[in-house]
Length: 199
Image (cartoon, rainbow, N blue to C red):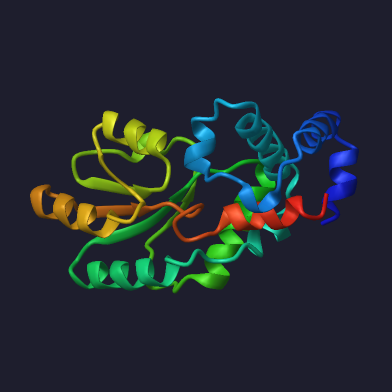
């Protein structure tokens, strides 16, 4: 996809790119999605707006070609152990635009073992899956909080995610583990950063 042309043809995209360039921001310094959720400075806000424009303009091919995170293989290995212990594992990931739904499903079908996950849910209402027997692994604090407030358990995907997950599994009657894509299995951040280099 030619993002330079897509951004140029988008009024908001042009505005966000100008602010990004005026602040002399660098693609490799793109904050994480979790950090962008708490964006306060002009720089963070500029990154957030331009990253959002990229995600809005991205086609299915862009989403389907995203790289795995450095931790993806370890996550899949740990989830395999949990499937063998009797847990149901589903993907639960938020869409951005319609193209992202197609692209994310293609990524799952091309990248993930089809026997590991029961279902792929690309939905914006993650909290509706929350109940006392479910847990969500997600890299965004605000999503984890919302899922927990809706009656489920949530584990923030950070350095301690596996210890936290095992603790929750030990102390709760969990039957279903929901795993996010972006930031957990899919390295959306580096994919956006690479795209920013082309603008």
